[in-house]
Image (tube, rainbow over all chains, first blue to last red):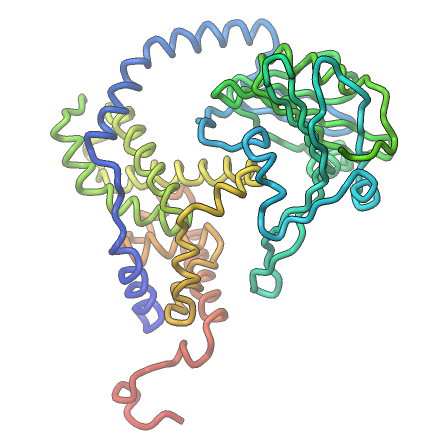
Length: 263
Length: 178
């Protein structure tokens, strides 16, 4: 071991040896036993589910073409209960240190995608809209610097009768825009959480409904624009998925308000 | 081959702390490292009946742990944007590093290496795994392992100021520094 290797070894030891996990063996063992006792039931459920899928779309490894691009959708099993969505962070996003906010007109000038603003979607009431550019870290010449993330435009809707919330985010769909420009012999892959469904009836758009657990759903629309770029319209709600889907259909078919002042 | 609670406890006590530390370096987050330890051991217990007893257990546990870490990082990359307020509150290894900037130059440089290089560095220089073992843990050819380690060291040499690379004690180089 040369001098550098010896120093690496020493440095790692010096910095890592003082850290210990908090979870006790009993905590982990109890979780294991609880999960293990559910396994046979899960297996039955998965088997039945798989049979249904094979008869319908076989979503566990789903391929389809979008434009000239072959999209491969894999089924990945993930625990999403701890994830924060814009439903949880809408108010906090504009408070993030270094975040820049824009109204609709400013956002439209700055964005490299079409920002849609539909007129009323009953019974939903639009509470707030804002364009946000968050700070992003990037590396240049080996140094970490802070720059601007792409602009996102967000709308917060609330149903006055039950206080359910829906947040719509619009952004430039960089991945899908690249995918649309790929050659016919190239493929592009994207993965969605387990149980995600591709919804029909959205024309040439891809519409994916994801269960984010804890009663939250995300309906993601990859919308192909006339210039062969894609816009990502993400709709997040703590509603039933049917209500979310209904909202999205109304949202997409609504008349656009071109220059409505922001509340 | 069934796993008794006593056997599981013995394995947990023997390996959990080191898996936590490896996960801490790889994810730079105490919360993530904690999740990885728990998820990896639950998976390990579930898969134990498929374990070949003629083989050493340690590389297998680390293989599960590193796969768990990679999966977690992939998942977080996809949803990073919406977690910013949460992440800002999190106690991360990066914060610890920044707090000690200057004093721990090499530590900081190791943390700035890409994931695949950090994996190599921590497995080889902290866990003392041999390259064939790392090859098995990471599921990559031995040649790729050697190449990654070589590049990781090369990157560290480039990143470190010259005086730190060659900062030998005077008695070792046998005289005054030129």
